[in-house]
Amino acid sequence: MSDTPIETPTGDRVIVGVDGSDHSREALREAARLAQAFDAPLEVIACWQDPALYATSYGYIPELDPEAFQADARRMLQDTLQEVFGETRPARLSTRLLRGRPAELLVEESRSARMLVVGARGVGGVLGMILGSVSSALVSHAHCPVLVVRR
Image 1: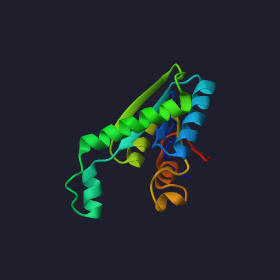
Image 2: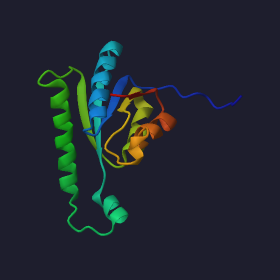
Image 3: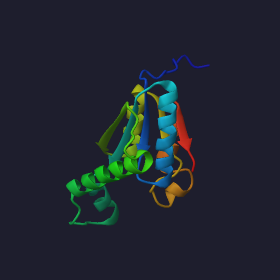
């Protein structure tokens, strides 16, 4: 038996990561239900990565503009909220757009959350077809309970 104390979540918010996929929209719906049941604030987080990460993976691509990536992520976030809630959004809903790797950012955010909700698969390509690289990392490393929602 380990002497390491078990960490307990310190926050009351339910956070949900969205990426515009069908799975993340379903995760948002479920997170809203949970936040209401817990009488907790709902925070919707979308992440965008620096285009330099893509450039190093695929060779030099001079046309990549960080502001365009951020604007696309902001638009995706708003479109997702509109599709899921329409004009009637939960009262205690907030949104954040974070720059960086989704798994790392959401693990850090989980330190002050009651629960973290994500979709089973996102828009991550071949690796995302299994469980999803982000959801898999969160299940392993988050500091609060994680719900992985399937469609």
